[in-house]
Image (tube, rainbow over all chains, first blue to last red; front, side, top):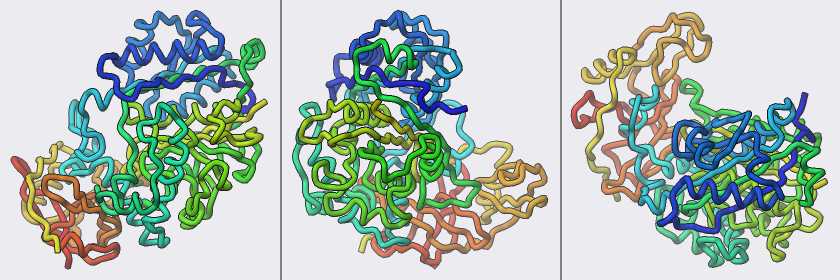
Length: 390
Length: 131
């Protein structure tokens, strides 16, 4: 049993806002849902499956189902942080393959800017029942940025990766973002700009870090017969995988991510190799996140990611592996500190031929989107989808 | 030269499962949990072994010696501090801080030893300083 060919992405929408002062979380969810359904040529009443994660207000999917007036016969509110929405695409395909729904709606929204959240530099506050790890971590001051930074520090120590190689990832994202009118940061930057930007937590500089934005997005996943009845280009799901990576009881290894499992599993399901992929959307909370995931997914040997990403190799039209052509989380959008959904959106745009002409990959027939959620240096969820233009 | 400075530390949440760990910390001892069924040590401590799922686990006292596995100096904080994973001589790696050190002179695989730093209103935290 496989999800290969059992579901298609028929509708996508990315909210244009990056600062949602006067829009509520629920409004953003509903606006993106409306946008994605209109993109697909479907209506709210066609939706019989609803997927959301912890960003949705209320208990699981309940409040948003009520707010939007949905009548789902299948729901899934699995939360693996920013990777949730990539995982939801796979889960939606599973549900569709099992006949549990035919039109699955996935939504995301967040307002960390409007709410003044100190996203990356302050330990996330405690609340509710402490997790078992909390007493052994929280008092030490783990933040988003310093835990990712420790992965970078170890990668540099073991493999000789340099700050300049990491900087190339941001440089490539900035080359793409200049063409995206909605991107938060549209200025092209250089390697020197990145390595001379202020150090936030060694070895990550300010420009190694993603943007903090409000906004959201939505995806509509449908059964093959629905996809055939619609007028949009057909984007077929051919592989999906998910994994958890933890501290493994103290056998901590910061040099790899859960993509080491999801890469081979999703490629095996799709029946293709990394070299077949024309475009990749890679979770880019930080530059190091991209480098480690590209290695783990099989685009470079472990430890050689620095060479893969350097010298413009990720820039569309120049390099061999164009990535995050919307500017990604590093330059365009990281709505609600959860960047997985926007990864799927740009992969679909590329497969449809609807990316900006300056960054559209020629004959883009196979694309991969990958997400990492939680903390790369503590514990995280990984999810991968492989998509094919039919 | 960027000498580390002490900063206010929140108290860890103590539960019945881990009370002995924190009581030992208050006496300047670092405990590790050992499984007598499979022989593996683990961290953070649990009553059921995360490797073989046996409930035959016990406390052992660690030597307090280790090496820095990785670290990052959090510069953008009111008081900069060094976040780290330390590999204990006994094997497990633990989340901690490197303290009483020059923050600009830390390195992976550097030898360190345990010290205990007071928290605001709870047991002290095991941290590490260059050996």
